[in-house]
Length: 291
Length: 318
Image (cartoon, rainbow over all chains, first blue to last red):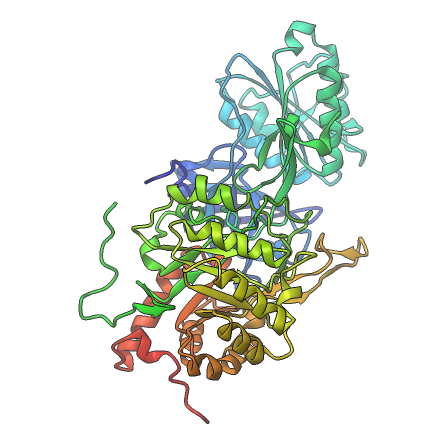
């Protein structure tokens, strides 16, 4: 008897091709992991052994893949011992890496307009979604950060309703692919919205005609307070939302039930595993983000 | 699906007998680490043919939600966990999960839990009429408020749990002993006399971790069970302490606690483990089983040992 999930996750020894350091303890790592690059979908993650001395793996969102080159890009912030060890790893070193793991974003309906809201190291899965949807469905990305964005930025030529013309900076790689994007920060960054990213998205959504707003779906990943603001936005404007969550993780294949979130489904409470039941969940089943 | 033979016909015999059962290899995937038996098949290259048995997640009579997060945290050379026996209840496991497992590829064992003697006995009775080939008795879970380690730390109470379950099932019973116990050999003796057919040694040690920025315990349950290489020396010593009484009654030990390398597996075999439990090591490497089997085989060939069972307990006095 074979279940659909059998052999969906690959264990690969990935080789580090680049590890570029950015301000705020951020780093962008490109690895050669051809099997994972081939299979990954937006919202999925990899589970990395950061060093032999800290053998428990760390779950890291996938930012971008290149199936032809066999590469996977990751944006990581060193926040503890594990991610700090990963930050110090060098080009040509090898990393045991499991992936792709998890329930991806539901992007099946091309008639929708996907509003992507990412904060900090929650930005990477939003970039993967934007890349995936390019030419498939309308996509707009809003990104927030309190440390300098680890991307090349440039002024955007796209006009977005509800957003002041002084808020013009975008991620250059998205602009070149015709994906509209705006940035938010409370750290006084030139050309960025001075405030929270959920408020930036709210300005845009409130300026839309009702029938356009009704076609929107919010997809979001980021710190918990930001996700709460995104949830409030979804509730206030009655827009469906999918949130990508994180939690300490051990096995990442559904075996240990270590990484759970409480859900409320048909009136019953459950703890669902973020690794394989998520990391992407429909807002409607998450009581901690209820209206 | 056909699985290729693991080894050449001339390879050492890695099968082992345990509590009257024949295991195709000595490796046993431990309860709480491998869900309800199917989860590791998500990994390309994982094969049930590598393991002698898979022990299902701890199961109670009624469903349990488990503890609030955080439930896991890495510590030096190990990890803490406090899952809190999240499970859908024994009836659901039998009706919905067991029928879908490939019982022709490996054996599946239950792991029974309760907060009263009656509950332990009822769980045993329910699993008695199911395809599991053995039932592990968890009297050593440190992460629940009632039952668990509170039974396991009292040798007489531990034996009462075994006796209650013995009366409820004819399947082999394997008692999982706590290292937090003052005299593990005495608990083992009482459990064997109460009808235990095998012993799992050891469950986790109780510990905690602290977040200095939040000034809170990291684990939602405050304390958790420590596993991984940090506990391996404790596990070896507890198996060594338990071995004499187990041997006297011809009762096998499922050795476990920080086994993460082929060398560890040989150490656990030498100290007297008729079967070898893998838990946290799978989190380090989901394809650990094949590597441990290869290491065992290479060692046995090098030392001219024909059968795994000949390796068990070969430890010499210094």
